[in-house]
Length: 114
Length: 115
Image (cartoon, rainbow over all chains, first blue to last red; front, side, top):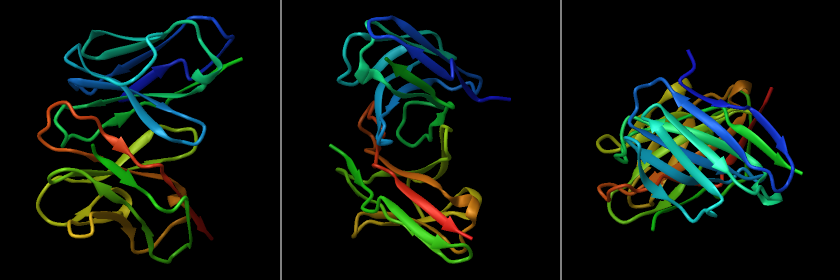
């Protein structure tokens, strides 16, 4: 059983397009996250939701909009894609938002903008 | 603000030898510290964490880490490396009791275990 799943696994699109990445977790966790990993493998948090409420919103262009329809899902919509958006995007979840909980990561979505 | 440093981009070790992957941190107060591993084309997997208590923490796949408050370090260790341990390892830190604080990752250390 997949704990944290993401779709699609690969996404190739042209500049200016709008795309979405979906994430689902079946762990019963309350908190979900979006991370961006760049080509140098540097991992940075973008957003975090706790019980469908946005709790972390890093300095991310407002072209990126997360949406959490329920506790088990956190989607990421990206408008007007740019070359610099090319990266691997990881969804993650944790039991709660307390700092002591470990996070469980999805397999990633490799976004390539041409 | 919290930060974490992994001073080595790559660590090379022969199979069967002990391995150490270094991590130092900077945070106000007592930290929550984590190690994650990333295999090629996969998401990160949790290995172990230090929250409080015993400074030596044991985790998955035979890995352990030692919290050293005076040196602000949390090095990852394994007594006998396997070729299958070759992967990218991330140390991460979170400040405790500060509300919705983010987890800050190091830049990663690539571990290469040769047969």
